[in-house]
Length: 451
Image (cartoon, rainbow, N blue to C red; front, side, top):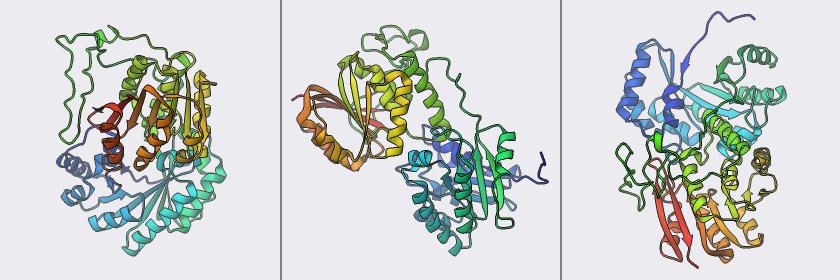
């Protein structure tokens, strides 16, 4: 293998690392980290991302961070932007370079940004135009260049197509994000038909490929107190509700030695547990939003209490919550998932089948507002996690089929407070007993239909 004479390192931890932290990192701390990295002689730093604060609240202070850093000669300060609006913000904030990203995998791109690769490239073309007018170079990354968590190996033709489009839009550099051993990356990267002199080739070696043996411990063991267990010394207290949010605390966590005391027997099968552990690892590495462990534990506890047998999920993504719910339902329980994106629907169904839930989970493709009125039979459980401004419409489409005591869970009611306001007003002033669970980073509204 022929090694290059020179390698340029771009530090992305101040963006890629900070954005996945559960708690907001103070702006001053971010500025300090950037300055200390620059002091080491780091030639390139991806400082932040100019993305919507609703999507990534951890980076809502992007402009403040860029204004507060001390510029070191010899270091270029860049930012990741998702579209032309983000590019305008980045240019106004004084970044040296604009970074963009698209996936070589259709499925991953849909899961990550809810757009096809073609749609993303149209967005990135507009982004590049903003950057070029401001005289800022554009460096474009291609995720899943050598492997996808959904599709496996990515064909060379798909990588070449993405590279060609990025070159045509004037990318100064193109980064290939890989999660396979380096020799394999080097061999496959060499097969790309690069247009010499048009751009610089960069290789971003991501974490190791997902191991089938990851998560040998039970990542979904209940970590919070069961209601029948009294608090003792050493148990952490409940999280207080935020000032801007209503209602219930999330129940306090037990010390590890008491995890099992008073906990209900978990009906989740080993195959489903294994699939959830693999997904937990995948969504962390690939930054895909899902219900997650902490909310998942609460949902399992609610299912154990209510024992629903006919459930509906609105918005399945790639099946994480579908597996969690169906595996936690009593024997004979059935879950119908409605997913608008056909690619994600296919993977959600496949993942559920591989988790041993074939026949218990059915994924229906279509717009939920059109599909829900045509579903038949009583409903005693609903999880709503799709288009936020349509939450109330989803609920009203299902209400005529609710049985008394039906459990309704609406996710992301903290992050998307404004969008779900009509839904919250309806359940809090209507035929529901409802409460909001505050997880610190987001909320869930849990409602019981009173009939």
